[in-house]
Amino acid sequence: MSSSHQLPTSVGSHSQSILGHLPALQQTHFDTIGKPGSYLFPIDMGEAVEMIQSDGGVDSGLRKDDHSKCYWYEEELDNDLKWSFALNSILYRGSSEYQDIALLDTKHFGKALVIDGKMQSAEMDEFIYHECLIHPPLLCHPNPKTVFIMGGGEGSAARELFRHKTIEGVVMCDIDQEVVDFCRRYLTVNQQAFCNEKLQLVINDAKIELERREEKFDVIVGDLADPVEGGPCYQLYTKSFYEKVLKPRLNHQGIFVTQAGPAGVLTHKEVFSSIYNTLRQVFNYVLAYTAHVPSFADTWGWVMASDQPFDLNTKLIDSRIDERVDGELLYLNGASLLSSTIMNKSVYQSLLKETHVYTEENARFIHGHGKAYNP
Image (cartoon, rainbow, N blue to C red; front, top):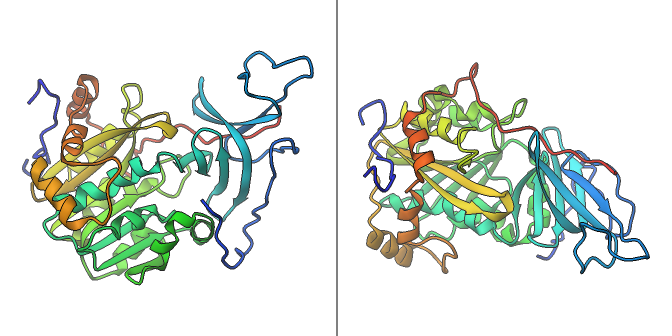
């Protein structure tokens, strides 16, 4: 076991695009900024840097195919580390009561959704994140019928859920009405999911919504923003929330899954290892897995938790994909799911040795927000 660095699952401390046409948003302040060549002014999400070619030739640092003004989106990953990519245009920008939002048309990743300066998903590779978030818990469950999504306002999680033939009902609970309306209007790839009669869309704090509900669910999904200091989501990563609010809302064979932040060699200690260890305090079986998401500039992590063991038999997973899932998955199959649970030595040892537990008073956070300026 240790030679392959696959974490044991019985480790709990208990015992083991085309823009759509929908009604205008209310007071969202979204504006079209325009194509490259127009004036680009500061916005509060990622640094947008204007690169200008002089008449004498291409400036050093620009690629030879940059024949006109080129704008760059820049996200601060750490105090001394930034990630940037060229834009065709900034399609929309705005802010809601809770967060800032932008829809970018990038040269490399296609259309990209950015919230509070952090990349949420990109047209080119969002399937990796959402397949890894949704399909593992549903494929490990013997017969998943009901699902509660915490967050998920983009609609992609619901889209993947509705590919499963066993699903009878999905509750999607997001706190931000304006972001949900924005995504429902402009992310046309998810419009069928928003219109699905099996979807119940609720605008509320997920903690409050779970507390007030009496029914239980086969799967609960944490499609939440990263825990950011001052943000609305970090309390939904705490031991008390998992133990007192979330777990009681799971059925007997229920499974919880959450996105768990960066999981690379240099970044997994930010929140990934802590989320994993926190869930170990609440559930009998906890399973971490990872995948590289190019537009996130890192390996990303997810964690599944249950009081029942996970069966990762590759033939069983493949047969359930064939029987249950409409269409072909682009990223996951039985073998890739199993391999995603095997960590490199550095991450493996960190997860086993992690002692930090998320509480309201003692939380860990992802590094700050993106910034915007006109150089």
